[in-house]
Image 1 (cartoon, rainbow, N blue to C red):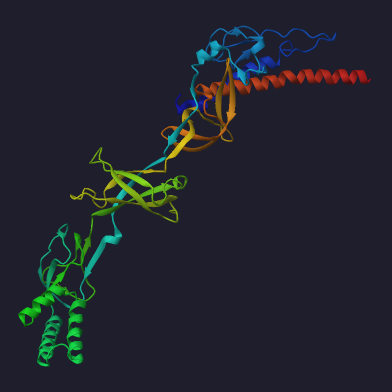
Image 2 (image 1 turned 90 degrees about the vertical axis):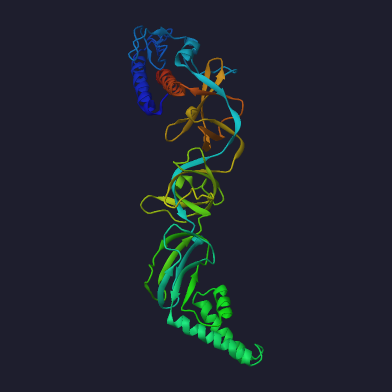
Length: 434
């Protein structure tokens, strides 16, 4: 039965049942009311519809729901069972067949909850590097002139001309000559002078290899190379050739894309599944059937005020060809830990009324028992039953809404049948008292 028509159907069934119940209430013979002489008359034959057993009438005719001819009810099976071999509500086998009732044994199975949501590929912030200028000068030559270019750690990004660098190079070379003239680097003053000049060059972004080249040349160079501090891809280039450069100016933004983040949003109800360390699958629309394995590394400690969702960060290893590109959209599936051998039943077999959650058990011999259950995790169209069902019981998995309506209606009829008898007993007691 499609979920979209469940509520209207149940309301229609109850409305039709109420019509039968009204006619039943107004039949004194059907209620077994005593005659004035004190003798009880035999209950009148009642009729119901084979397709809609919840409709009950005290006279033959046609069902107002489907138009089928009403059939006499079995007087011995009209109410709730009271024998020792079975319990619950009894429904005629023909009616059960017409309802299309199907059952399934309650079993234990492994469950693994899955959250499906969308996400976006982002740069791993821990692998993002900004290259900035540390000394005033001019961009004499750009060795890396375009964005998207791959660079290696130590690779020269640009040639920088700076009067300050030139003077510092000369100071360094003079310090080396002085140290050699003093008989080596052993003398404390000369050693400190060399190290001071060397540190200035390093702090300005000049690599140790460049300093080694300077020592071998023996004279200052007009330009020195600014090296890349990390391997990766140039995401942004903020400098052009010949540009005046000032200290603190950002020159390049470089990101290592060997690992990326996939950032997704999840609702509060899914926080139990999306825990740090949970496994996840990431799929890209342009690479169907090729999921990427990842792991949840971060769950936001606060919810977004507008969407009421929490941000989840999934770390995924990229391919050598960098198939996962920043700002791409992705489909994300986050998996919970596997629940081993739990009692689980099909989702469609559960009746949720708002206040109660009901499952219908077939107890045998045409008897059915509504059972209140407590549910746990849900996965793959199955739901865990924490309380209320046992392994091996026979569960109704179709037409359970009709059986539940039948049960409620017959319970109401029994209460109405009991009421006149109690009233008669009260009147008799009152008469004897007089």
